[in-house]
Amino acid sequence: MPSAWNNRNLHLSIFGESHGGGIGVVLDGIPGGTKIHLPTLRAFMERRAPGRTATSTKRKEDDLPEILSGALPGGEEGILIACGTPIAAVIRNTDTHSADYSRTAALARPGHGDYTGHLRYGGYNDIRGGGHFSARLTAPLVFAGGICKQLLSAQGIEVGAHVLSIGGMEDTPFDPVMVSRLDFETAAARSMPVLDETAGARMAELVERARLEQDSVGGVVEAAIVGMPAGIGDPMFGGIENVVSSLVFGIPAVKGISFGEGFGFGEMRGSQANDPFYMDRGEVRTETNHAGGILGGITSGMPIVIQAAFKPTPSISRPQKTIDYINKTDAVLEIKGRHDPCVIPRAVPCVEAALAIAMASFLV
Image 1 (cartoon, rainbow, N blue to C red):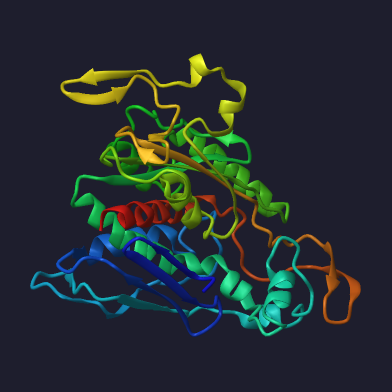
Image 2 (image 1 turned 45 degrees about the horizontal axis):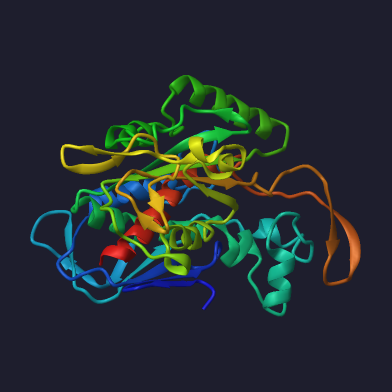
């Protein structure tokens, strides 16, 4: 079950292809009685939807989820109540240009899963728009994550993220000790979801320059969770890092993840890396948060802070060396179609969704 995820009492399965009839999700384990506020869910999904900003693909999809099961009207406008049974939803694909892929069907797009998918599925995989390997599959992930965000918020737990960097150009990072819901709302309200608008404008210029040069650019998303109780998680294989990573790496283009200081620990001494404890009005806190809110795979009560690195969009218009994997010959590929010159702005809600699902799995 390569597109299914399970942890404790929460189970997630995602189906569909980029240019098929639709994409969808089955989310099992949401407790009966959980309120789902549809306008909030749709607003969250719209942050990921294509065709909304200048840095996005020109493909335009409404991404309106059709909920097939698992939730019923709650008696208030815009409110659904979870039944406790699997929540299934489908999102129809309405703006596909499949002909863009017919000419190069046997050519392996560098950086894509075409060749490896051909091997894995015996040549029967749908290559249009990347098929099941497409970032289009993050729409149902965000749907599931949006429900989990609301479940967490009802318990005082908030999840948010921002663009930390694009092409080496950096935003102001979260304060790992004092990050707040206001930081999340500030970033979410902007088309380039950053804390520093000046940095965001420079990032947008960098992305546009890459697009004009028929190229693309990568970056890093920083995400945080506040309000998570201490003592949640497990050591070794069931730890917070393990579970979060298994979901974040489900987002296409993610090639790295770090927690707290991450790889920066490799340049520190213990006296610098350790977070000193202190009591704050009866609560245990730490003066710093290099650990990113996780000790021994278990939440410490401090904000959980992660960074996810995304590679540049592999679909670029420049001629690229490749192979024809049917005829076993060398070839040159010029990709046509509609692609993001940078996935990072639209990836922000995807990372939030992955974190929310991971945290919800420990609490349902």
